[in-house]
Length: 339
Image (tube, rainbow, N blue to C red):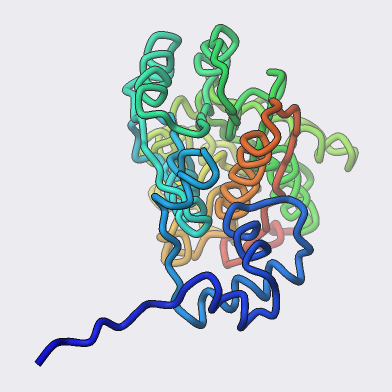
């Protein structure tokens, strides 16, 4: 008996369910800007309900554009860059794009140029560079390509499209939270000096202290992003009785500080309050559970994709600057100072 071939849902089925034309469905699939948000949501809901899967090859032929995007990033397991990459790949997939990842050992001029060249050979439609360190900012200054490009988590002073977490506001939120708990000032253990994240978090911490009329202590360099560095620095701070509140530049530094305080017999939060940054998955399970700042990596990814697709659609480079606000996650590592 001959098997009957069951046809999957077509674009016309989506259009019929959403109550729009097939041209509108096509515009939504191609992220065209001239579609009302309510219509876009209705079409997306119809796509989900029907389980419609666009024919990527046909779309590329019809639009004359590749459905492949390139990402350049450092080969790193650090939580921030890794989370940004994962979120961007997911956002691109949700929009019907594949992603080619160019992972480099160091974000220097030569490595970035070679990664971009490989993407050009693959005929990508546009490129995102996750560029959190100063060497990457310098490398991008010398990059000359006729292709849409967006920098993520990069140099705020560099011209061109940039999407980043609002590092300054996140640090200010952490600092204000500690001040509002009753601490007279807040000490800061910083990240590596070559990272833009470190500079932004220092600036936000200092701003919040000055706005509150509080003393601004010297920055305590962590050296790197690791718990080992946090523990080493925490040993020094634990010997300083005037230190009652610490804002660590990331959660791994904070983890090391918690360990050092425990070793030195200083209780958290009774004797010392600690706030981190990143909200790594382990943060809720530390002893005590860590109060921290949670960046919205998914929102950064979606915004960077949107800016990149606007560049692709318009054919013009963007100068858009977007910062995405993080969130304060309150747990149990902050308390009032002992009177």
